Image: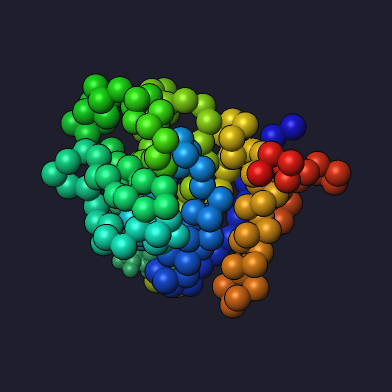
Length: 184
Ligand SMILES: Nc1ncnc2c1ncn2[C@@H]1O[C@H](COP(=O)(O)OP(=O)(O)OP(=O)(O)O)[C@@H](O)[C@H]1O
Ligand SMILES: [Mg+2]
């Protein structure tokens, strides 16, 4: 059975960045994350925190002119945004599989629009608006073995993050006895 998604909430952009930084601690070469959510939900904010977690000093902004923005850190980061139709076409032309084979980590905003062109092995991060202006709900859903094996570690990482004053994290990730630790 697939692990269920992890759910958490943030109440500020800094919290979303910090949470993303905690996720980045678990990143491995070749990883893919799809960032899903409406305009202004916080997909770029998540990417900024994730990049900081990878030790990227450079400021991460929305990729406007180039489809892929590359950054160098502990692991290199490819940041894509496929909101516009032509960006989707460009992404499909690009041969994303090559990008994903390069040993860097790839984050794609609006990535759910091109799943047919992607390997079925990624972490989907879905960000939705909450009641207050700065409230966001985040759902982290593993698709495929790479992230499924890390959901327990991810749950622990987010639990530690939540204990620092943010959160809460709903920890119904794994069935009793299931343990992804060996794969981490
Ligand atoms: N809890 C929060 N998490 C993330 N962003 C927040 C939060 N609260 C407020 N914000 C604000 O919401 C905005 C999120 O913008 P961001 O560019 O990250 O969204 P996006 O999902 O990438 O949008 P787009 O679809 O236009 O690319 C920022 O202005 C940020 O300051
Ligand atoms: Mg964005």
